[in-house]
Amino acid sequence: MRRSKSRGMVLLLSAAAAGALVLLAGLGVLDRADLAASDAWYQARESADGDIVLVGIDQRALEEIGPYEQWGRDIPAMALEALCQSPDCRPAVIGLDVLYVNETQPEADQWLAEAAGAYGNVVTGCAAYFQDGFVEQADGSFIRDRFAVTAFEAPYPALAEAAELGHINAMLDTDGVLRHHLLSLRLPDGREIPSMALAAADKFRAFHGLEPVERPPVDGHGFWYLPFCGRPGDFYESISVADLLSGAVPADYFAGKIVLIGPYAPGLRDSYITPADRAQPMYGVEYQANAIQALLWGDYKREAGDGLQLAVLFLLLTVALAFFWRRSVGWSTAAWLLLCGLWLGLCRVFYEAGWVLHVLWVPAGATVLYVAALAANYIRTALERRKITSTFQRYVAPEIVRELLKEGKALELGGRQVEIAVLFVDVRGFTPMSELLEPAQVVEILNRYLTLISECIFRYGGTLDKFVGDAAMAFWGAPLPQEDFVMRAARAAMDMVRSSQALSEELTARYGTPVSFGVGVHVGEAVVGNIGSPRRMDYTAIGDTVNTAARLEANAPGGTVYISRAVADALGERIRTTYLGTVKLKGKKEGFEVLTLDDIFAEGRS
Image (cartoon, rainbow, N blue to C red; front, side, top):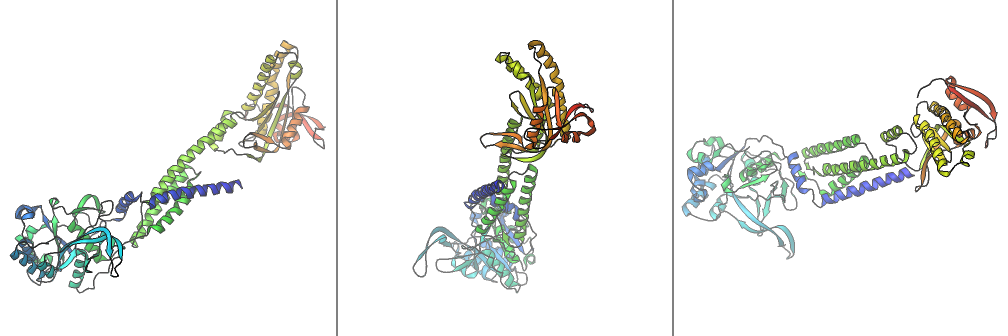
């Protein structure tokens, strides 16, 4: 009953602790750390197909052509013409990852629009601005939209008419990392604008006679989790806009490919921290390249819902803490490492299958519970060691206490049935002598006798149960099993009788009254343990074996050790005895075979 109650308390505690950690995870306390861990675990570098080429508005172009603020629309127009020199070698798609919003110079603006519309393969950038607000619906009602479009920057009319629009919005997550892609955006007038990546991917497949790309799974706001295949610099072949204008790269190199033209210099402020490399920013044109490649591959990932993951987290943490509780450091550590390793492996398997799980939730929660359980186990062990020490140091020799601490035996109310050897000893002649002495002298003499008794008991590893006046009780075989425990009890009894002779001679000389020990030893089963109440208990032995040993001692004359037939049989030929026959002992219905222990042949401690 007590064990079932204890298990119930452990499960209840485990569930409470797991629930607290689940609440913290659900409130987003682990979000930043979890996102960082997920980025490191999921985002793997892969070789792209080679169909995407970046042409950078890089530092070399800025040095050769001039500051970007002074560039006219004639420069991108010449770049488009250099790419599309003939129908036979033109790129499948050209993406202008630049906003050309207002009309500046009519001739240059018209030139860029004509170059963009020459082959219908240009996607030009546009951008929307969002805010958290209320949007009016067709029926006149309003709904709250965290990404309500409040403004839209489109290319100047001639370019917008000549090229396809693709938005280049890059929306950062709450931790400032760009790991999602907005597939398309809906304008207040109802128009839907695809992302530049989506428009480019569809155009590329159409150029090669293929169906449009399969749309990735998006959340309620149109975002999808982007699996980056390249890190900063992986897509860039150091082709500069200056190379196009100078003819350094032949036009047929770009034939049938996706060409992205965009800023590739730090001063142009078009870079973001991404999961691919959280230490080095990625240029916006590289982000577009990663999104296009993911769309062409169609290997999409869907982020699993938090509700189910929180439920799984609660279950795993509850079981984990229940296992950690009262386990050794070795077992707890092995279980902790196994759980964390299996979860990371499971996350990887699910990721390959298209699902994104929270990488850190389970390992972080398991680690907290593992450390907490270790601390609790350490404190509990220390308290138990203290309890064992304070309880048994009064009863047994120090080496027995050390063995108990090694075993880690818990002390609880109750006992267990075990075979033990029980010894009772009493001082004969002490009462008449005490009548002649002062109280202080009586205490001094009694302490000398009891000290002698204790030393004999501890010398042979016995447990000193109690002192009762000038008598004492001890037993062997508990609290720990002992080899040859009956012989240990016999030797302790013989030592008591022999050691008391010198003390008896001293007292006879001083007070004229001899004093000696009467000892009784019996072996058999008894109940040994903490007997009493939770507020007051003693570690003792009870049962018929104890009562029989007491009766033997009561009948033993001074200077004599009475043993039972069971003791004599256990020791066999290693002792010399005198058979006294069947003696009527108090409390026994039938006669009881009694022997005196005269000598032990094998000297030395067992």
